[in-house]
Image (cartoon, rainbow, N blue to C red; front, top):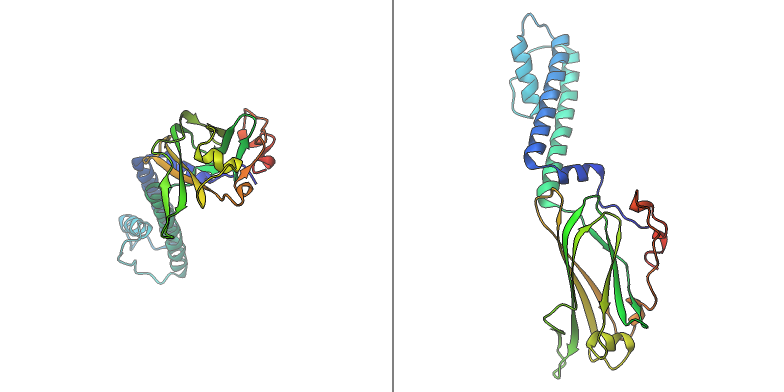
Length: 268
């Protein structure tokens, strides 16, 4: 079901925050955890034999999962609280590690494509539909569309050749709103390779690939967005990859594009 959302609120928050903000934020949580459990420890241990400074030091080191000198006490309540403290410290460390991994090693898939391209025979246009599925504003989106085909050489060896070193479409979008459908409209030239394949006019090859390269910037994300989409068209079954009618229209809700009417028809 469309539109798909490839980011939770936590992921979106982490992606859009700078590294210093993330580190300072988690340090604040660690010290908050230390202060809370320091107060609890102070209430349940004999404060006449153990100094407040020792209790706070124990709480801070436990929060950061560092090796610590145990506080000597036979108080069963202290042991239970210490165990709970370790659990909270472990959860916080796990969340911090997940935030670092998300920030530096993992980016979501931004662009969702329609399962098939659309071909308008009367206008001789191929239409590729996609949308930004991440709740992050995308800017300076550069799209290039290439074609290459698989051929069978005289010695029976299969190989791939580029139909042209130049893209069949180059388009730059200043911005790509989340959940707003974009249509790439490619005007085909009569008797070129892609036109021949779609119209069954003597295409020479086993298949043809339409490859879409997308490079973009995402607001407040440290790395650039780079994604690749490929449609493989089989001359024996063109309709498996191409619909020979116009893509379904979507009636926009400008307050929230996700609520626009017609999403259920996106893949049809």
